[in-house]
Image (cartoon, rainbow, N blue to C red; front, side, top):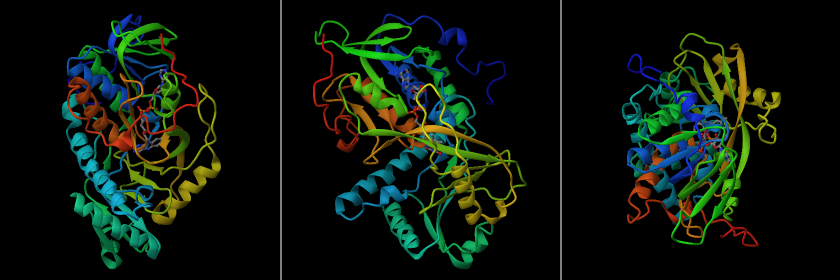
Length: 415
Ligand SMILES: Cc1cc2nc3c(=O)[nH]c(=O)nc-3n(C[C@H](O)[C@H](O)[C@H](O)COP(=O)(O)OP(=O)(O)OC[C@H]3O[C@@H](n4cnc5c(N)ncnc54)[C@H](O)[C@@H]3O)c2cc1C
């Protein structure tokens, strides 16, 4: 990370290992990009905040992802665009991409350090006439939302992207897409949060959350392996485990988790700059500034119970790289040097979970599947709202924490 010489780059073990305070205004649970960003924006805005992580910072999805900015609408978003309401939702999501892009463009400056942000542009390719039709519809929606994309096919695609397979029928190009380094973003957010007064504590797993009925005291007692902490408000940034955390206060979030693969190759001379995605097959592909290729796109891994790491699978590694070679034939003799897995949170309705619960006031969440791209924006928006609670919520109803079915019995412990 390039920064002023002599400047500290990480929250020190001494700081993150210190005793928990007995109380605070806001407890943020989860030390990934969402939790560290929340802690940063809240602390910078003057709130008293404690970030609690059960392991080390940035060890789960935020430090194991592929680092891509996914700004073009994806196939899962487009699959239900039959009605006008669907189109309105898609337009809103496309506009959100613009806002996320603006946050990322300024984030290195905001945090005072390099995040290896590269706005390289991105292709989304189509192999079949049906996929090309979806790309054209997508382009039309993005244009209406103000996102710059273009549909490119035939000889023009061959001339502009000679590295792509000649078998492809077309692609959309979006100049805003790109990538950043997932290994440095959350740690830098955490460091800046601590510099702004946030308490940052690792190795403190949240085991239970008590919700108090009396109004005079703090509403929550968060019980951790490192002791209890009282708080007026709690923010659930537990990523793939966000459902478990919300379950502690009786909220059933509409989330599930899945293990995903990423592969990285040996370096090769520069072959292409833009990120490459496929509209119909699982692929994200980019050549990094180190000239290695990062190949991902959502290939599954077997699961393993926490605290075990999810294993990798040859079937996924082979399937993922086969799609990459079919799209960029020049990769055929490039060797994969490492494959790893990470655990991602998915919502069944594809919307993120962001805002404050109506069922359990004071309990908030900031959870999203494309969370490397969108967590900085969502965390900033949620922090702004928490700092001025009378302001109207910027989040649509479909992001609600309470949209899942209630638990059959009231599991919320009231004291
Ligand atoms: C392999 C892979 C590739 C991906 N690629 C991309 C991509 O290219 N672009 C993109 O935009 N997104 C991508 N994503 C998604 C993105 O990484 C996540 O959406 C994002 O990192 C979520 O951040 P988070 O902070 O919410 O969760 P996490 O980073 O998972 O952090 C949650 C934290 O909460 C902690 N925690 C959980 N329970 C407790 C508890 N009870 N007590 C204390 N702490 C707790 C965990 O230990 C963890 O550190 C990818 C994800 C994976 C897995």
